[in-house]
Length: 452
Ligand code: ADP
Image (tube, rainbow, N blue to C red; front, side, top):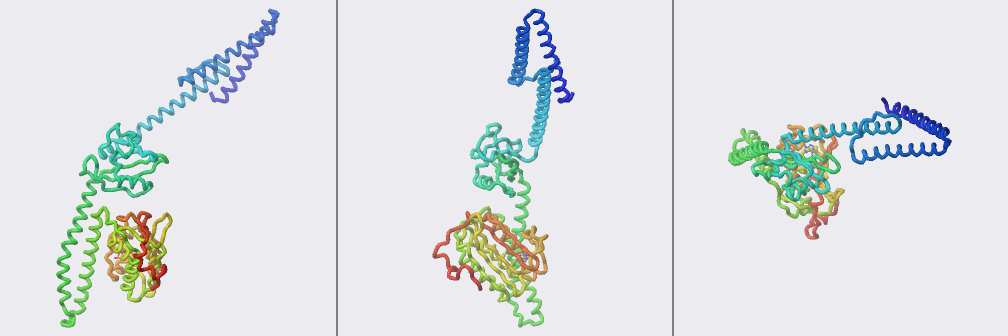
C-alpha cells in the first residue's frame, strides 16, 4: 500500500473510531445521568492511549531497535508502519553499503600495487593494503593513525614531494625501506578534499632495464670517443692543398666526424645527467651569464640576426653554473639555428608570479607545428631532420635542457607558431632565486634592455 493511501485510510479510521468512542461514552453518560463525567473520562482514556503509543515509538527509536510490524489500524499504527518501513530500508541500504565497502577493500587489498590513504591535514595514515605493507615495511595495525614522520615517508625527498601536493609527476626510484634492493615509485592521487591516495609500485625490473640501457649508451659513447678522436686527428693532418682532388671528400669527412663527436659528447652528457640525483648548489651570477649568452648567439649568427637581451628580473640563481649554462646555450643556439637570416632573437630574464623567475629565448624563426610540441624534448625527436642536420643538430639538445631543468626543480615552457617563431622558457621556483650582489653585476651598466 502506498504511503498516501495508508495515511488517508488511517485518518478516516481514527476519526470514525474516536467519534464512536465519544458517542458510546456520551450514551453511557446519559444513561447514568453523568454526561460530562463520562466525556471527561473518555478524553482521559484517549490522551493516556496516545501517550502510551508515543512512549512506545520513542523508546524503540531511542534503543535503535527495529519496530515490530504492527497490525493495528489508525494513525498510530500508520506511524509505526512508516517508521518500520524506513528502518527496514535503511538497514538494507546499510548492509549493501557494507558489502560494497568490503568488496572495494578486498579489491584494493588484492591490488598488485601498494595503496595508502593519508589524511591531508594531519598527514596520518588512514589505511594501507598488504602490498604497501610489504613494500614500505609498515606494521599493521601499529602504523594506522600514525603520523608520516614516524614512517618511511618522513624522508625529506618524499616530504617535499607530498608538500608539492597535486603534482602529476610520480616520485621514482626510491629504495624500499623493507629491502634496499627493491626500488619503488610513488604516485599521489588527490581523491578527496581531506585525503590523499598514494600508490606504491615496485619498479625494480624497470629500473634495472633502464640502468642497462643507460650503461649501454654510456659505454658505447665512451668506446666511440677514442676512435673518433684518432680519425679526427688524422683528418686534421691532411692539408687540403696537398691533394686538391680529395679536398671536398676530406671536408665532408671532417664535417661528419665532427657531427659524430658532438653526438657522442651529447650522449655522454645525457648519461651523466641521468645518473645524477642532484647538482652542485652554486651561486650563478645572471648578468655575466646573459652577456655570455649574447656573445655566443652573435658568434653563431655571424651577423645574420639581431640579438637582444632584456634583464628585468634583477636577481641571480642558485644551481650548477656549468649545467645551466649548457641548457641556456642550447636554447640560444636553437633559436639562431632555426631562425632564417634577418630574424631576431630576444633573451629575456624576467620575474614570474609567485616569486620565481624565467629565462626565455624568443625567436622569429620557422616555429614548430602544434602536433610536435608534446614530443619535442624526446631524444632524437626532430621536426625536420634535414634542417636539424644541416644546422649541425644532434636531436639531443632539448633532452639535455629538460634534464638539467628537472635537476633544478625547474620546468621548460614552450610556445610556438609556425612562420612566426618560438619561445622556449626555463621557469625557476622562488627557492632558486638569489639577491643580486652589487659586485656580481657586470651586465648592469648596459641597462635592463640590452640591444646588440
Ligand atoms: P637539434 O639538435 O636537432 O636542434 P634539439 O633537441 O635541440 O635538437 O631540438 C629538437 C627539435 O626541435 C629540432 O630538431 C627542431 O626541429 C626543433 N626546435 C628546437 N628549437 C627550435 C626553435 N627555436 N625553433 C624551431 N624549431 C626548434
